[in-house]
Amino acid sequence: MFVTSLLSTKGGVGKTTLAANLGGFCADAGLKVLLIDMDPVQPSLSSYYPMTEEVSGGIFDLIAHNLTDPERIISRTSIPNLSLILSNDPNNQLINLLLQAPDGRLRLAHLLKAFANHFDLILIDTQGARSVMLEMVVLASDLAVSPLPPNMLSAREFNRGTLQMLEGLRPYSRLGLLVPPIKVVVNCLDQTVDAREIHDAIRRTFADNTEIDVLRNTVPASVIFRQGS
Image 1 (tube, one colour):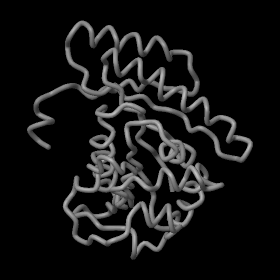
Image 2 (cartoon, rainbow, N blue to C red):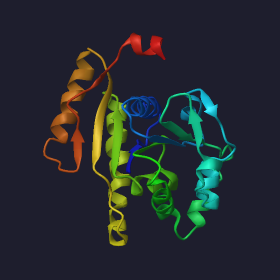
Image 3 (cartoon, rainbow, N blue to C red):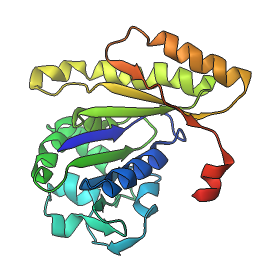
Protein backbone atom coordinates (compact mmCIF):
# COMPACT_ATOMS: atom_id res chain seq x y z
CA MET A 1 0.00 0.00 0.00
CA PHE A 2 1.29 3.44 -0.97
CA VAL A 3 -0.08 6.65 0.56
CA THR A 4 -0.01 9.88 -1.45
CA SER A 5 -1.35 13.21 -0.26
CA LEU A 6 -2.35 16.22 -2.33
CA LEU A 7 -1.31 19.26 -0.36
CA SER A 8 -0.93 23.01 -0.42
CA THR A 9 -1.54 25.65 2.21
CA LYS A 10 -3.34 27.68 -0.47
CA GLY A 11 -6.82 26.85 -1.70
CA GLY A 12 -7.89 26.67 -5.32
CA VAL A 13 -4.66 25.28 -6.75
CA GLY A 14 -6.19 22.05 -8.11
CA LYS A 15 -5.70 19.48 -5.35
CA THR A 16 -9.17 17.96 -5.54
CA THR A 17 -9.24 17.73 -9.33
CA LEU A 18 -5.81 16.12 -9.38
CA ALA A 19 -6.73 13.65 -6.62
CA ALA A 20 -9.96 12.63 -8.37
CA ASN A 21 -8.34 12.18 -11.76
CA LEU A 22 -5.30 10.33 -10.44
CA GLY A 23 -7.61 8.05 -8.50
CA GLY A 24 -9.79 7.31 -11.51
CA PHE A 25 -6.78 6.74 -13.77
CA CYS A 26 -5.08 4.34 -11.34
CA ALA A 27 -8.33 2.46 -10.67
CA ASP A 28 -8.87 2.09 -14.41
CA ALA A 29 -5.34 0.66 -14.64
CA GLY A 30 -6.31 -2.09 -12.21
CA LEU A 31 -5.09 -0.73 -8.87
CA LYS A 32 -7.38 -0.82 -5.86
CA VAL A 33 -7.60 2.85 -4.91
CA LEU A 34 -8.98 4.56 -1.82
CA LEU A 35 -9.70 8.29 -1.94
CA ILE A 36 -9.93 10.10 1.40
CA ASP A 37 -11.55 13.54 1.53
CA MET A 38 -9.82 15.33 4.40
CA ASP A 39 -11.27 18.75 3.59
CA PRO A 40 -14.03 19.51 6.12
CA VAL A 41 -14.68 23.02 4.75
CA GLN A 42 -15.07 22.33 1.02
CA PRO A 43 -15.51 18.55 0.67
CA SER A 44 -15.64 18.58 -3.13
CA LEU A 45 -14.02 15.17 -3.53
CA SER A 46 -16.91 13.57 -1.63
CA SER A 47 -19.29 14.47 -4.46
CA TYR A 48 -16.92 14.22 -7.44
CA TYR A 49 -17.99 10.71 -8.49
CA PRO A 50 -21.43 9.06 -8.43
CA MET A 51 -21.80 6.47 -5.68
CA THR A 52 -23.01 2.91 -6.02
CA GLU A 53 -22.85 2.36 -2.26
CA GLU A 54 -22.68 5.23 0.24
CA VAL A 55 -22.21 4.53 3.93
CA SER A 56 -22.92 6.96 6.76
CA GLY A 57 -19.39 6.89 8.17
CA GLY A 58 -16.48 9.00 7.02
CA ILE A 59 -13.37 10.83 8.19
CA PHE A 60 -14.96 11.85 11.51
CA ASP A 61 -15.54 8.21 12.43
CA LEU A 62 -12.06 7.25 11.24
CA ILE A 63 -10.20 9.99 13.13
CA ALA A 64 -12.42 10.66 16.16
CA HIS A 65 -13.45 7.08 16.90
CA ASN A 66 -10.54 5.13 15.37
CA LEU A 67 -13.07 3.23 13.26
CA THR A 68 -11.39 1.28 10.46
CA ASP A 69 -14.16 -1.19 9.52
CA PRO A 70 -14.45 -0.85 5.71
CA GLU A 71 -18.16 -1.73 5.80
CA ARG A 72 -18.89 1.29 8.00
CA ILE A 73 -16.65 4.05 6.66
CA ILE A 74 -15.79 3.24 3.01
CA SER A 75 -18.21 4.13 0.22
CA ARG A 76 -18.03 2.74 -3.32
CA THR A 77 -17.94 4.93 -6.41
CA SER A 78 -19.35 4.03 -9.81
CA ILE A 79 -15.80 3.36 -11.03
CA PRO A 80 -14.58 -0.20 -10.39
CA ASN A 81 -11.68 -0.41 -7.91
CA LEU A 82 -12.27 3.18 -6.70
CA SER A 83 -13.52 3.68 -3.14
CA LEU A 84 -13.92 6.77 -0.99
CA ILE A 85 -13.96 7.84 2.64
CA LEU A 86 -16.30 10.82 2.71
CA SER A 87 -15.73 14.07 4.56
CA ASN A 88 -18.42 14.16 7.27
CA ASP A 89 -17.15 16.82 9.66
CA PRO A 90 -19.28 19.86 8.68
CA ASN A 91 -18.69 21.61 12.00
CA ASN A 92 -14.91 21.21 11.72
CA GLN A 93 -14.63 19.44 15.07
CA LEU A 94 -11.67 17.25 14.18
CA ILE A 95 -9.13 20.06 14.35
CA ASN A 96 -9.91 20.81 18.01
CA LEU A 97 -10.00 17.10 18.80
CA LEU A 98 -6.57 16.52 17.27
CA LEU A 99 -5.06 19.57 18.97
CA GLN A 100 -6.08 18.16 22.34
CA ALA A 101 -5.13 14.54 21.63
CA PRO A 102 -1.64 13.37 22.64
CA ASP A 103 -1.33 11.46 19.36
CA GLY A 104 -2.96 14.18 17.21
CA ARG A 105 -0.49 14.46 14.36
CA LEU A 106 0.45 10.79 14.56
CA ARG A 107 -3.00 9.23 14.52
CA LEU A 108 -3.67 8.85 10.79
CA ALA A 109 -0.33 7.15 10.13
CA HIS A 110 -1.31 4.37 12.53
CA LEU A 111 -4.95 4.11 11.40
CA LEU A 112 -4.11 3.69 7.71
CA LYS A 113 -2.20 0.48 8.45
CA ALA A 114 -5.60 -1.22 8.80
CA PHE A 115 -6.20 -0.78 5.05
CA ALA A 116 -2.90 -2.29 3.89
CA ASN A 117 -4.51 -5.57 2.77
CA HIS A 118 -7.42 -3.85 1.02
CA PHE A 119 -5.85 -1.20 -1.22
CA ASP A 120 -2.81 -0.65 -3.41
CA LEU A 121 -2.98 3.15 -3.32
CA ILE A 122 -4.48 5.73 -0.97
CA LEU A 123 -4.91 9.30 -2.24
CA ILE A 124 -5.71 11.95 0.37
CA ASP A 125 -7.20 15.32 -0.57
CA THR A 126 -6.62 18.11 1.95
CA GLN A 127 -7.86 21.57 2.87
CA GLY A 128 -5.99 24.54 1.44
CA ALA A 129 -4.88 25.93 4.79
CA ARG A 130 -2.28 25.01 7.37
CA SER A 131 -3.79 23.03 10.23
CA VAL A 132 -3.14 20.05 12.46
CA MET A 133 -5.22 18.01 9.97
CA LEU A 134 -2.88 18.83 7.12
CA GLU A 135 0.19 18.12 9.23
CA MET A 136 -1.30 14.76 10.27
CA VAL A 137 -1.87 13.84 6.62
CA VAL A 138 1.70 14.77 5.65
CA LEU A 139 3.16 12.55 8.36
CA ALA A 140 0.99 9.64 7.17
CA SER A 141 2.14 9.94 3.54
CA ASP A 142 4.81 8.15 1.54
CA LEU A 143 4.67 10.90 -1.09
CA ALA A 144 3.21 14.40 -1.25
CA VAL A 145 2.06 16.01 -4.50
CA SER A 146 1.63 19.78 -4.54
CA PRO A 147 -0.14 21.43 -7.50
CA LEU A 148 1.30 24.89 -8.11
CA PRO A 149 -0.28 27.37 -10.54
CA PRO A 150 2.39 29.58 -12.16
CA ASN A 151 1.34 32.88 -10.58
CA MET A 152 3.08 35.04 -8.02
CA LEU A 153 0.57 34.56 -5.18
CA SER A 154 0.68 30.77 -5.41
CA ALA A 155 4.48 30.70 -5.67
CA ARG A 156 4.87 32.95 -2.62
CA GLU A 157 2.40 30.90 -0.57
CA PHE A 158 4.21 27.70 -1.51
CA ASN A 159 7.46 29.13 -0.16
CA ARG A 160 5.94 30.86 2.85
CA GLY A 161 3.28 28.37 3.87
CA THR A 162 3.81 24.87 2.48
CA LEU A 163 7.60 24.69 2.76
CA GLN A 164 7.64 26.22 6.26
CA MET A 165 5.04 23.70 7.39
CA LEU A 166 7.09 20.80 6.04
CA GLU A 167 10.23 22.09 7.74
CA GLY A 168 8.37 22.32 11.04
CA LEU A 169 7.44 18.63 10.83
CA ARG A 170 10.99 17.34 10.50
CA PRO A 171 11.47 16.80 14.27
CA TYR A 172 8.88 14.00 14.05
CA SER A 173 11.58 11.89 12.41
CA ARG A 174 12.66 11.03 15.97
CA LEU A 175 9.36 9.16 16.26
CA GLY A 176 9.90 7.35 12.97
CA LEU A 177 7.63 9.59 10.89
CA LEU A 178 9.51 11.24 8.05
CA VAL A 179 8.43 14.18 5.93
CA PRO A 180 7.74 12.59 2.52
CA PRO A 181 9.41 13.68 -0.72
CA ILE A 182 7.49 16.43 -2.51
CA LYS A 183 6.51 16.36 -6.18
CA VAL A 184 5.48 19.78 -7.49
CA VAL A 185 3.08 19.77 -10.45
CA VAL A 186 2.85 23.06 -12.32
CA ASN A 187 -0.90 23.34 -12.87
CA CYS A 188 -2.93 25.51 -15.29
CA LEU A 189 0.11 26.65 -17.25
CA ASP A 190 -0.94 29.13 -19.93
CA GLN A 191 1.07 30.86 -22.63
CA THR A 192 1.46 34.26 -20.98
CA VAL A 193 4.93 35.69 -20.43
CA ASP A 194 4.37 35.91 -16.66
CA ALA A 195 3.35 32.26 -16.40
CA ARG A 196 6.38 31.07 -18.38
CA GLU A 197 8.78 33.21 -16.34
CA ILE A 198 7.35 32.02 -13.01
CA HIS A 199 7.42 28.43 -14.27
CA ASP A 200 11.10 28.78 -15.16
CA ALA A 201 11.85 30.45 -11.81
CA ILE A 202 10.19 27.58 -9.93
CA ARG A 203 12.36 25.06 -11.75
CA ARG A 204 15.54 27.03 -11.08
CA THR A 205 14.69 27.43 -7.39
CA PHE A 206 14.41 23.69 -6.76
CA ALA A 207 16.89 22.42 -9.35
CA ASP A 208 19.38 21.24 -6.71
CA ASN A 209 16.86 20.31 -4.01
CA THR A 210 16.92 16.57 -3.33
CA GLU A 211 13.61 16.58 -1.42
CA ILE A 212 11.47 18.72 -3.74
CA ASP A 213 11.12 17.67 -7.37
CA VAL A 214 9.37 19.84 -9.95
CA LEU A 215 7.90 17.37 -12.42
CA ARG A 216 8.78 17.77 -16.08
CA ASN A 217 5.17 17.28 -17.16
CA THR A 218 2.79 20.19 -16.61
CA VAL A 219 -0.98 20.56 -16.70
CA PRO A 220 -1.86 23.18 -19.32
CA ALA A 221 -4.64 25.72 -18.89
CA SER A 222 -7.31 24.66 -21.36
CA VAL A 223 -11.03 25.27 -21.74
CA ILE A 224 -11.37 21.61 -22.78
CA PHE A 225 -10.78 20.51 -19.18
CA ARG A 226 -13.59 22.74 -17.91
CA GLN A 227 -15.93 21.56 -20.65
CA GLY A 228 -15.21 17.92 -19.83
CA SER A 229 -15.70 18.22 -16.06
